[in-house]
Length: 190
Image 1: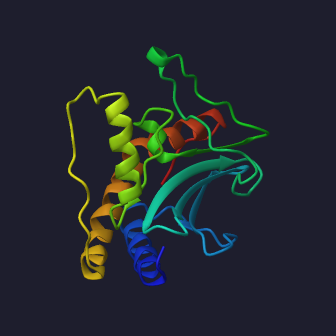
Image 2 (image 1 turned 90 degrees about the horizontal axis):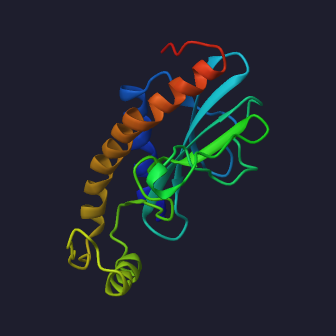
């Protein structure tokens, strides 16, 4: 991600998290420029939100995780946070008291990896177009190719994208975190 957009993204996330999810605080142990937040609802349980910037493209994704070991569960691949019975997909179990997942796995199919695109990704559009030629989309949706946008237009896209990510965190991650907290014998209190 371009440095200028990354700085604006971080500031926008910081303000949105302070406003919408103030019980999550910046994670002091985040390294490598990671934008990470944590909340400890009970002793021995720490919940995480990680806003992951793509190093090459102007886009970000969100991962959530929890740990009984007071650290981001970086040692494990992101798992599946839910069951999808019609696809025979089961929720991934925690590993050694830790779990992490991409936020988009709460609503996307297991093989999809959604990112919030600050600048539309032409390569992704081309690969999706090629896939639609092999396997047509059941909705009949045939989106137009993304248009080039200016840096000012990219800046203007950041706040609505962050707002969407925060809304999805509240819709999907918070109930998941509440469930994990209950499984650890505690009550979710914010």
